[in-house]
Amino acid sequence: MSNKDQAKTPRHVAIIMDGNGRWAQLRGRPRLVGHHAGAKRVQEIVEACKPMGVKYLTIFAFSTENWKRTQTEVAGLMRLFKRFITAKAQELKSKNVRVRFIGDRVRLDNRLQDLMDNLELMTADNDGTHLTIALNYGGRDEVARATKRLAYDVAAGKLDPKSINDETLPKYLDTIYLPDPDLVIRTSGEARISNFLLWQSAYSEYEFIDTLWPDFTSDEFAKVLARYGQRDRRYGAVKA
Image 1 (cartoon, rainbow, N blue to C red):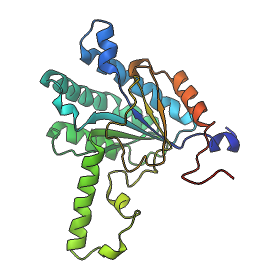
Image 2: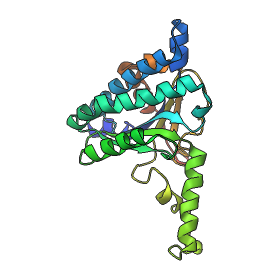
Image 3: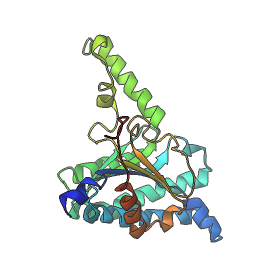
């Protein structure tokens, strides 16, 4: 890939993986079948990142609002997360993928938390694709938790309130180790951001596509990245 091509490739892509349930229902199958199909698609897109020049991939796996779904679906999703981590841990390590999780882990059961911790530790030395999985994540919840930590530091005398600016809060966010996303993709035809990376995506480019997540192939991913390369990102400035 040439330097010119690299300049047109998003360094960090975030994806709202929507449409698993509808994909299954269109086939007369239970919603959980769609979630299993969607998990297989994750693997394909992660593997496509390196040859396409994407260094960071962040995926929205389960939101703080998803607990409102039926108990059967939530329980099934939690089993799927455990199965995915257990089955893919060694493969992710061997393929030089570094995995991190963002979100509030407190509500997750101990077994799942242990699997998440172990996968992060297992892949900590990898420096290939950086895969971040948002699990029990919400943008407003993240900002609230970050603000609380910031307030504690002010109360403890570790932070001068007069020094706080727009570069301070990101140091308390879950994504402190990530660059802001260049491109946010949402599948399934819905045109909303659903409380995902609210602070981080202030200047991100967005793509809302009709394809349901289980049908989102690496070929379509490449087409979305190509469209991104045709955009002119000015960050509020005027084109010269």
